[in-house]
Image 1 (tube, rainbow, N blue to C red):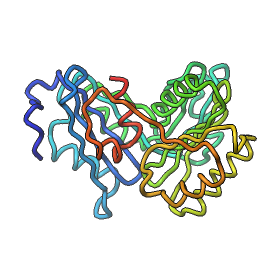
Image 2 (tube, helix red, strand yellow):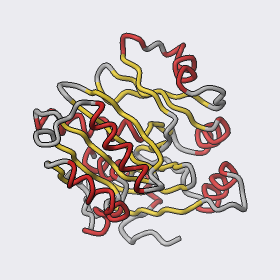
Image 3 (cartoon, rainbow, N blue to C red):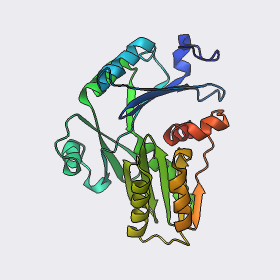
Length: 270
């Protein structure tokens, strides 16, 4: 694999490494918080020849540089297996119990993080994957994708000062976050069939008592792949907009259109 000329891993401490784990894929990016021209992103599917864990191990060993002492190393977990817990009910020692309240008979490592004051995200990661990455990465920080999106959308909701619903299309899933003077709901569900996706979104809109004329629906992510759903939503909801992001890293128009929203949001924070 050839990295851009402006990335010299002999000085890994100058760069940030971010790994993104999806149910059937692996991607990573290298960037610099001090140089907006430094950015490299690569994504690969897992295939069916090896198990998920074996595929990750092979990728890490084959590429060979993931264990270097980067300025920071982040691992983002994309999975519908997460639950939100209000701070007053959260107890780190009971995180596993809280997770299993919603997801029964699920083994693995139970992790948690908090990107919004008073709300903890409790989520699951395969135990062997967690153990392997913890050993082979330089001081990795694990977080759930919902943590990044929640932080982004909560800030935008406050700026807008209105009831609004954010929808992000990604990785054959849809993530939904709704706000009204605070978070109303957050969820992720499969988006493999347009009719199912449309049903879930319109049903969530109605159950939350959002107004078709007054309240806003803000979209992000892989919009091209869901044009049919978006077209029908625009007939049902008057105020449909695209969430605009302004990363501090120099990205092309194609990268802004195709990179996962949580990856671009991370580059806005840098």
